[in-house]
Amino acid sequence: MIHIRKQSALASLLLFAGCNIATIHSFSPTGNGRRTCSTNSAKTSAVVGSRSSTLPVSFIAGNLLQRHGYNARSPVLSMASSGAPLASDGEALQSLFSKHCNEEGLMTEEMMRNVPEIKGMLEQGELLSSELTEIWKAAPKFPQVEAATDDKIDVDSFIQVYRDIDDLFEGDDEGETEAEASNGVDVVETAPTTDEDEVDEGLKQAFATLTDGKTISFYQLKQWEEITSLIAEGALGEDEFLTLWETSVGVRGKDINLDLEGFVKFNNALDELFEFDDEELEEIIVGEVNQEDEVPAQATVVALPTITEEDLPPGVLFSQLANENYLVGKQELARWGELNDMMKEGDLTTYELNTLFDSAAKAPGTSDMLDEDGFCGLYDAIDSLFEDDDAPEAAEQKPDENELKEELLELLVDISKLQEEQGLQMCGMDCSEEEQERVVEVVSELEREPYNQVLSLTSSGSGAIQKQELVGTWDLLYSSSSTMKYNEGLSGLAGGLTKFGGLQQQLSATKYLSDVEYTEQVISKLGGKPLEVKIKGDWDLRTEISLFTGKPSNILFVTPDKVYYGPRQDKADHWKSLGPMNLLVLSYLDEDLRIMRGNTSTDTLVIWRRSK
Image 1 (tube, helix red, strand yellow):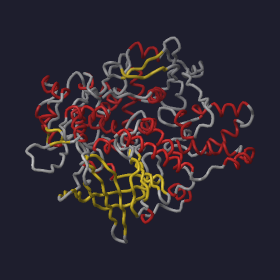
Image 2: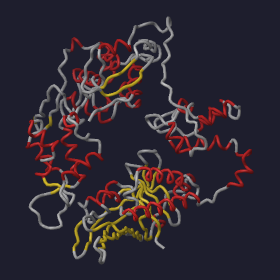
Image 3: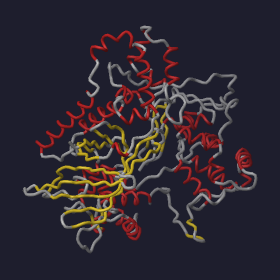
Image 4: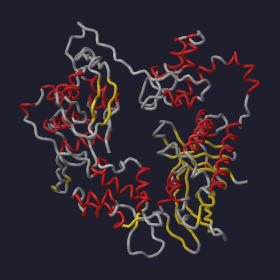
């Protein structure tokens, strides 16, 4: 697990110190997992203090620039350094689990301990057996159909175990200090103490401005201009800030205040998020000059290719233009070939483009960047300038308003036929990456169509989708959920000599009750009557602000109660395979088609069609 700072975050931090960086080609992890900055010394120049008239030199970045040979540490997982899967690589962890689980797709504690990556750490003493036992106890266990002596975990719990082990190694490579209990408070590793006489005068002044007394609270520090700027620029995460706070005060939580010594520790620890070697730092900082005497050198930008394809859908065009933060600004628009041609030919003036760009909706937290919705709005505004000239041709070529919907349904039928011919899982759960990308592309276009009830209600401000519009029986057409794919369906009961045979969802609602019932078909590969699995529970449709778009979203909440299969029934609260259906965002709705997206993974699609 190697933490990598984006190039923009580095540039922002150095600009806080008054630096204008000339050429930064890359910012990447080295073999030992530390963050380094690669530069071209022949073209690199910086001016220190060039912005002092408008922006005070940051104490944090200033310390960084003054500490030549500064060596910081970055969390490195011992397993990752030996070639084991990264804790963030879900697919690799699923593959690792499948190699060592039993035929039921489950794993006992003994089997988990014999996974080579974990066994090796136990043998080398990097991981204590008692630590692994505690991690195992904390992991959710798979519900046993029959009485069993050994607890077992499924793939989700294995990934949690793996990541909990990974968390044990997020300390210093040169040594770790165990947490000690004192008066019921967890003590955390702290930075070396600092003599108050050696404290930078600027830090003292900053500390004095933040408090009327002798200490600073967690929330006072978070409101410090230096911190708010770093968080806004994306150079410091909320979780990193909390970790730095706990390290500085020496205990976990936000209740203990920070004195001057702790404030200095906090600044030093914040500096240590970035690392420069002597030669690299000297290449970046070549001298300190006065802004009035010398004009800062301009930064050299590595040119990216121009997008020359014509008539690309706006969603596809946005994905090709977007930067590493998946946003588009004026710099990214310069790579749009068709736009450049329009401006060269005089069809669109710079003034018109700037006016349209300024009126387009900006991404949350920015003033000059567009997310996908904002870009599509700009695209449509530019296109509307030419509607009069193209009106006769457009009238001839006006497509049927359901053309995209029919295209999606035909695509899903083709995928279903291909899977049936090849003996693969139904409902798209075994389709290729190219097929998944094509489905996502068509769905993204369909969601923007005016006959999408979700979009029309949001645009008009008329309110959210009502529960009664979802009431009815729906058949599953497609699911890209990796959990459903791994479990071969929703219940997880298919597999071996049986296979998933389809899923139906029935939603009902009265004034006081809202019930949901799933009916899953589990078909025997040897023939015979299929097993019918029923999952019953409650559901609700709520409107909440999306974490990704910052706009209101219609979210379907499902709370499973019981699972019925054959003569048996079990409580569903610990039936983990049901998770993919429990929290989904409604992105498209018409009279007979409903499309849901994952709440945290927007590329996860679940498509339903109303039963006839």
